[in-house]
Length: 275
Length: 275
Image (cartoon, rainbow over all chains, first blue to last red; front, side):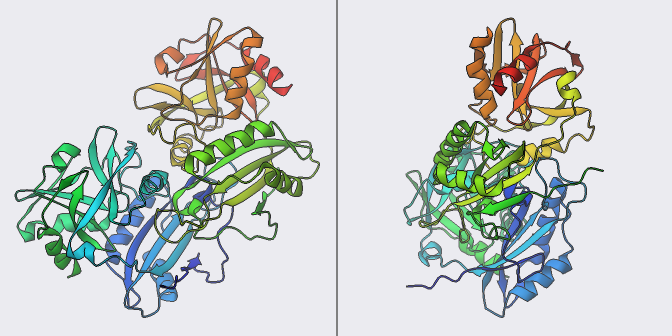
């Protein structure tokens, strides 16, 4: 039996904090943003990219993102020299009285959480993964699209749709049968030497690994494309991969009864992303 | 200067609790529901209706709603004999490790918050209210529509659009210019003796006062209608009112440059709802 290691956390840099206020707007409204990334030997991996996204997402919501040095200091406090662990940073607008309008003098709440690296099945890398096709359709909200905010009930409902551990992820479509992402992953589909990832201007979360892959594709000999990706087109792709910051990239071998042979793109990307 | 009374709260019935866990899924994902209602002399007003909605909304998300007696006991503990105060109940799915999938053995977190009744301007009752027309459009998510869940970033962004205290509320449309609700209120429009409230099967929150009004309209001599309400039709209404559980009903006298004379529906409804 694996032991479950309870995550540890700092709230506003305080290791003694028992939690967050019941009046925090992060709880009341999901009024905040977050980011998840690996930490190796107490060093956050691709920190500059994750911090840049955290700051950009905060800016869209009008939340004051703490300086990078303050968050790095939290990470130094919280993480030991373990070879591999996971850091989640949550920033909320802060504590408020009742009502949607943010108080004028509100102070951001910053939460840094340490947890163990998930124990992904080695088969996911060796043989590729199968996807559940989610019934839930993502709603379209251009004002929030792309942002990793705390309003994630759609992801929760979608993830509750399947229990079968043989299905590694769930593919999410919008109401027009356009493929957007998976519950915790972004999505790429190769057509010849063009590798397409869905446009996220109406829904979805723009992950750091997605942007890293987009910038690596040309040097791997592929043309990167960001465009709407109808499910019917996705199912005709030469190969499909999914990605996030923790497992990097997995080859998709089945979704909704369509099968793909194991192919090299995910392994190429993992190699490139590990550099 | 009015003194600000800091709200008090119980977490899982515990008055000593300093807050909620930083690992609570209510914070991480907005994975929960809430309800706000007046409490008079320590008695929750229209409790049966509010509890029924809380239980129904919880059921949609698969969250185990605590028994009414447990919540009533919390309210008895938290509220003194004040003539009027506000209770907010938040239920979250509970504390979880990382990942959207709820743990099998998760235990609901229940939070009961006491705050003072807002100090609404008396002019809102005497002369009616003006509405800001929000630029933000509500997204359509049939799986969550009507539910008072904790994913409320749209309401926050909409409420941040205006600072002018003379605008009592913000009118929210969907992407098709259909009127849905206000940021913290439901909406009714009278056309002759028909009083229409927007259909909430694709977005919006179904408030208890909205359902109370729907059931009171016939005895007041009106025909109640639940239907899509395009903005252009709303602006041609004979009168418009907004409602919620705290202020009951206000007459709308202006939105987006369209003006209405003061009329009797809001006063009739307030009288009926206070019975």
